[in-house]
Length: 170
Image (cartoon, rainbow, N blue to C red; front, side):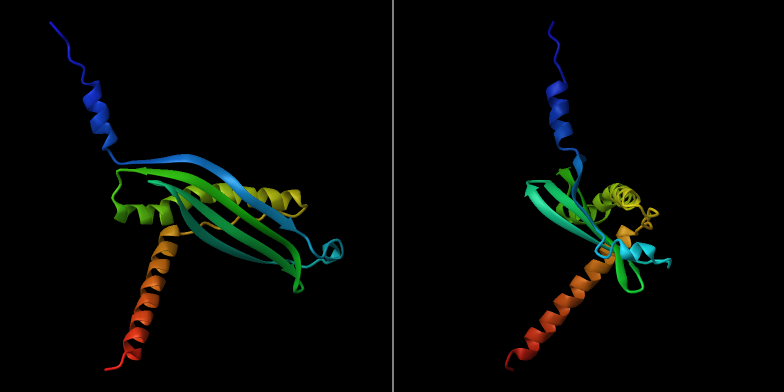
C-alpha cells in the first residue's frame, strides 16, 4: 500500500494564493539642521511648525516595490529657522498573485500606513536628541491622501485632453 503525499499539491495551490509581505523596513535618510544656532536658542517664543509629507514608489522587480515616506519638519521662531528635519522611511514590499488594480491602492495606502509609525518615531527621536521638545506628527489619513492624488491626476489628464482638443484644427 502506498501513501500519496498532498504536500506538492498544497504548495502549488498555496503559491496561487494572494500574498503581501514586508521584506524590510529601514531608515533611508535623516538630516537635522539648526542654521541659526546658538543665537536662536535664546529666543523665548513658541515655534511655528510646518510638516510636509510625500510618498514615492519605485518598482524593484516583478511584484517587489520600494515605498518611501518622506517628511520635512520645519520649526521657525520669529521667521527664522529654529530647526529643520528631513527624514525618509522606506520599506520593501512583496506582492504575490494580487490583481494589478489592487496593488496601486496598497502601495498608496497600506504601505505608507505601515511605514508612518517608524517615521514619526525617528523624527521625534532626532528632535529630542537635538535638545528640543519632541514633536509627534499627527495621524495621517493615507486613504484620503490617495483619493486626493487620484482626483488631481484625473483633473490634470482632463485638462490636457481639453487643451489638446482645442489646439487641433476643426
